[in-house]
Length: 380
Image (cartoon, rainbow, N blue to C red; front, top):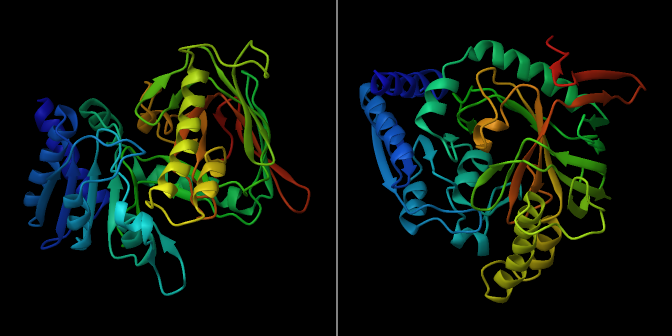
């Protein structure tokens, strides 16, 4: 029964979410881990059922700081029609493009072939699912995509028009996020056009704050990501953010000036940031990134790169960020790289805030409440 549900879900995603057509080439990138292997095989079978041509490439598990296998990069260079990254953790960075970025005719640079083909030349459409499990897939991919798309559209329009948002929460978050001139993105499960793509499970609206403008305190009390895994938070993690960058990381109840305790979630998060800072400098020394970019990547390891709002009614907080960040009654902030290309970093660590209140403020002085104590206030 469960296998049948898995196969049906894979078929639904390919047909409705990705709109795979007869004769198209579908590249499936995965790892030799039972959960993602099973899902990848279901996608392989569903692709065949749609009379398209699937190829599976298997590589070892990669973290945020690892490079993808050369076989994966070569497969992407063949420019398939659809790419499914069904990874246990991450796809991996593009070593060759990290040194010599791809460039579009309008001058944009991309440090990976995947992003270049999707965002730059818009030759592929894609989904990526870091940490996806069979249970999560079957439970959260069978949703009302029409309703999700409507909600995403409403919230994205509000965020795109807003000058800034104020985010507060019962756990102590109180932060002003400048988003003036930024465009919000929708992960709404509609990846039918070339250049489109997002997560499965889908269900979030997200935006990149203006670099250097976020101010205040953020408290993560749901779950946090590290470079290697995700974890539920027992003792909330506090960030002090000044001029857009993190200046302090500490556990709730501690002094902001104290060092996080050993094995605390705050210590683990801070260690990831420090590791990314050191790695940026080391990679420049080794010639793995362009000269002069080490300090930039180091600085942006403390950038607030994203504010996202969860909109998948079937998602819940489990300690797996792929699902957690889509859950209702939550928002998340990412530490590191943003989506607008003006804050490149080696990391992008999503971290969750429960039951937030988010108020958008506009140029004319008006405001609109998006979430109130986690409850969705704007639906149309």
